[in-house]
Image (cartoon, rainbow, N blue to C red; front, top):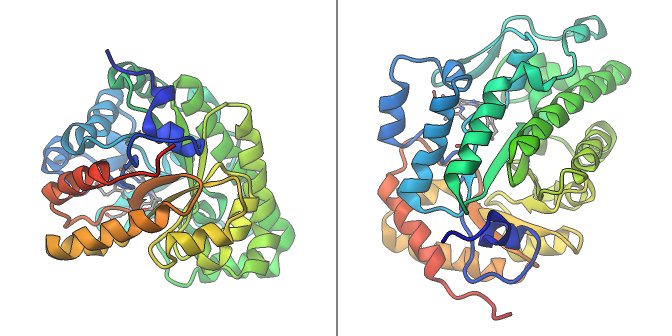
Length: 347
Ligand code: CP3
């Protein structure tokens, strides 16, 4: 008999309860490095795959079968809810999201309306089918954080320095807050759809927010992140908050109100535990590029992450960012075994 998802090591670790072993999943585990994913997706645009329930379910399950990870993450993308409300956005292979008409002023904001469940019926259907099929393995729903969504909408595509985004943020604070309010509403709507359909946890990927100083984060983003986590409190599922290069922001990201703070590889987990306020679990943080090195390098680095993770109140093992496309799937399978076999503090 499978255990109910509520007692799974992943959800127990999110709640900072004792676990039989350290739970593990990988950001961007669905897709990317899996040959069975490439075969299934051949000739199809990723955003079309993201709106086809059977494909969403199958791609979500592939890494669970292969790696025996402790959680599945829904196959979708942070721009799916934007496209669902009519924003002209595409994901260009090897590039990322590209927007037809970038947002540059308050006038452009009216296109960003609230997301209703009826805008993403394929997500509801896929999550429902998946929670039935996954049995005791929890399903993580996700959405983009408001700064990261804004970075694609305002700069128009992937950006190194976020010039247009930051320029709007610095020069038109009122339009900026209006933009962040609308994006936070869309994020809340997308997370609520997934939680209502049966997702066991939700993660907000504010991937690029590490480009901001602490003070700018506080002023320009924190109120909106807080509102997202407050709105999701009633859903009764653990909330995870992640960004890249956020070492200086870990404390304030804790304040935003999630149950779990994701940490990239730049700050060790014992240091992260000092920076994040008490009462939070941590998720992370092996450098994904280490998986391209020989196993003799990977193994001790993994054990070190686990060792440092034990100093926190709860630890979910993950990479510090997404799986790199060239990663050998067999290495991820072996890594999962290694994490599961490592000792955990006795309860
Ligand atoms: O984690 C998972 O496996 C679930 C699926 C998932 C995808 N995107 C599918 C996808 C998740 C969680 C995302 C989130 C996402 N999308 C983020 C936040 C996470 C992060 O990595 O920081 C961001 C910034 C995006 C926007 C986006 N979509 C980018 C930058 C890219 C990469 C473009 C490229 O080709 O390198 C995408 C495309 C994308 N989304 C792919 C996948 C599996 C790869 C392209 C493909 O399979 O065609």
